[in-house]
Length: 124
Image 1 (spheres, rainbow, N blue to C red):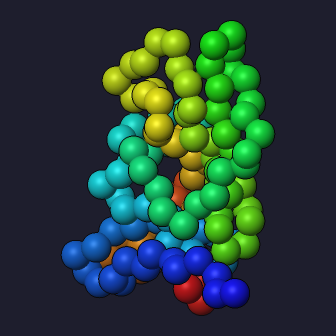
Image 2: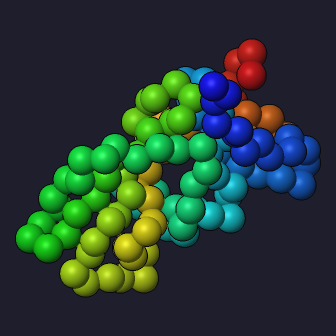
């Protein structure tokens, strides 16, 4: 049986995207990052590719649930997807992802950097 087809973005100066820090599988375009919390390594993404969700749902608060999101290639956890929210905000909406940017690398159009610090990745 053949494995899943992976979405891959073109690595050029006009395309910016995030990849898994562990296996470099492409996960999201930069334009999908809707909000980044300034005091932490957490960001909200509108959508992601090449992720799988844990079938077990985790309660956040009464009436609210999320599911762990994993890289489909190496199975590293990259964050959570909001399944149900009682009160939605500008950034937090059902179907969006809360991602730990320390689990990501970022292609900035010129080179690969650590998504949480902006430090260039050696041998990327």
